Image 1 (cartoon, rainbow, N blue to C red):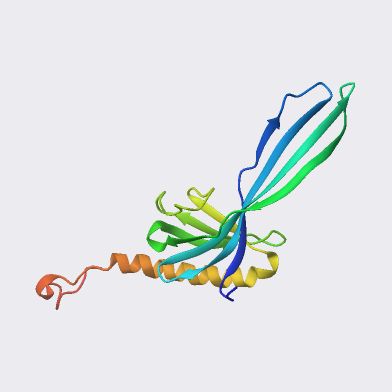
Image 2 (cartoon, helix red, strand yellow; image 1 turned 90 degrees about the vertical axis):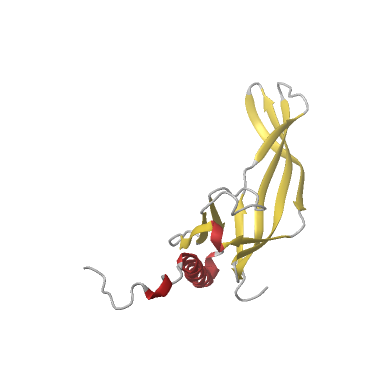
Length: 177
C-alpha cells in the first residue's frame, strides 16, 4: 500500500431474511452485513477508490419457550469477499471534498457529488460518500483531504477560465468600483 493511499471502510445496508417457516419455539434468520473495505488516493483527474465488498453472512437460530426468548444460537458464519474494484471519481463530478469527525470518532473523508453519475460503480454511494478512516490515520486523512480539496478547486477553476476578449477589448480600461 502506497503512503498516500488511505485505508477506509463504508458500512452498507444490512439485510435480514427469514429462513424456512418459523415455529412458535424456533425461527432462523440469515443476517448479511456488507461493507466496502479499501484505499483512497489522489489521481490526476479525481479520487481513486480501490475496494472490495465484504459480506459477513450469519445464520442465527432464535429459540423461545413459553413466549420467553431463551437464547440465540449461531448456526453458521462466513465472510465473502468480492473482486477488487478500481474506480476514479472525477473532479468534474464532485462538489466538495473534506474531512469530518472529531475525537473520539473516527475521521471520515467526505466526497460530495455534483451529479448522480459521479459515484457510478461504487455500491451504496448516492450524493454523499463518507469514507471512515482508522483513528490512527487521522493526520494522513487530513493531508489527503487538503490535497484533494486543492486539486478539486484547481480543476473547477480551470473549467471557469475564459479566453481573453477578442482584440484586447479591455486593454487600457479600468473596471468600475
